[in-house]
Length: 254
Ligand code: BTN
Image (tube, rainbow, N blue to C red):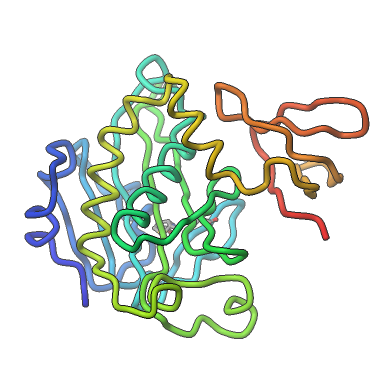
């Protein structure tokens, strides 16, 4: 079942995201669509049935066949309003809570932008900053790619990715998922400075306490994931030292 703007609006408590919901059949990337559109209103949501040039973090491709939710929202903000470093974490939490309420599954987060079911990825998040002419943060484009229907992604990806239909054995409503994500986001974005926000993340970070491989732009090393701090940065123990990481790729080490 495809997404439908009117059906989503009926399920929304959110007013922020209710005004401009654009459902497309196909687009290169919903993030690029918002980035390249002139004069897009704050709170605009773009959803596409498929993407021909879906983008992931670190320049990777995000395979986006029909059967998933590929959505992006434009959120005008400034650093004094929201800590941009916490937005990705907040989106991951809002997506988890949406999956929990629509399916009763128990998703977990792989710091910082992946949502997992068991040991497989079900959702990826790509937040991109948009700056004004003075190079100050003006808005954030929040991109979410969620695997919903049980479609074949190909040998390499089927080993490491899953979808909601496979995990529940049932059809899952994309309209309900989109509406829940938007409802959660509108509330959760205002809670990122509270201890409860960090606590909700902590309970969903499955790497905490585990041996992980950390890959930064300059090096790779093994460490133990210890905790997250109040800015959602990952604290790892490398040898005898604790290191605080704001950006890196992490994976459970075998
Ligand atoms: C990742 O896993 O590295 C992040 C993937 C983010 C994919 C979403 S799908 C909607 C939006 N449009 C894109 O091109 N990317 C994001």
